[in-house]
Image (cartoon, helix red, strand yellow):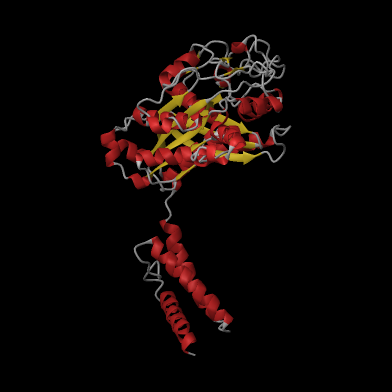
Length: 499
């Protein structure tokens, strides 16, 4: 009996409290007190729930109604304390890139506006035996001043690109060491993904293992995992907020950007570094995509190889690099006097649930993704006048996306659509990151970059919708940036001028 007395007494007290609350409801809006806000209430609620279940096991069936009243009132307290995500606006205050067209956001975008191609013959390794020998390869890159030399020698390039682009984004956002020291680092996070992760580190470990496990790099496991780039950057900065990596193939960056924004919208963070990084240009990476029959073989004319929506396209061109944004809660950005490049409005994720590498033949996943992004952002279809398309230069992917875009926005005569990949190639998991930068730069400058190599458009394509071979004036109202990946992963995100 002694073992039962404690819980029974507790139940009696709770029942009396709940009854008293009912009687006094007209005097008090909420009847169940909490300790220091939501957390204490949740803990008490869990304890009462356990006691109620215990009482039922002992035959006290009538306890359920009284406890339900108490728990319901407590849930009301919790629900009313949840922040309204629509009240926390998210803005872009920094951009960092590492690309075949430059490692500064302005240099990168000016090259895009000028129609410069970053696609060339691969020089990093001998690929003479491959049917594809071209890529958006980064020819010159230095980590000096960005990554400690000891780490730079051991890390995979995807991590080096990620950390460098991340720190450049902070610099671009005016987050000096002095300002960084004043930030609440428990509310600053890093969410930068990678589709392929540390491929070279992992490949080198396999080669070493052929000799002996003793020859393996002791860092091969951590430096091969996709999460470690975000983790190392957070360690360097001392940022203790949300920190992880998402890998959704070529949609990776958009997934990371939207999730990072949601952390801010929900009140879980004030500042987030987000985007994507990939360095797949090694023999196993090239060979893997060749085996998929996904790559262009226009080796004799590399700059003409990536040609979205053109009848003569024969596959996409691999690229490498990183694109990172600084997202910040609006009032936080204003308080530190940050320069605001654009506002992040929202976005969405969907899955085709159809095929590993092919889009749904009716473009259902893409259309659903765009519609959900509009709903999340509170944006009407007619407000979209610029789309930075995923358009990789593949046979089916280009057309399914084009059809979905026209289905959603075809009634807007001001709509302009282009593909950054016509000049950079496809940066895999980093593609959405640099394309987000391109979209923001379009908002800032009032210019959208050309579509290269669109000499012989597909019959169903309306060239009046697509940007031509030269840059065009466009006062962007709302920009939509699409990213889709193997596995049927889709993500669309929206940016607008800050007002």
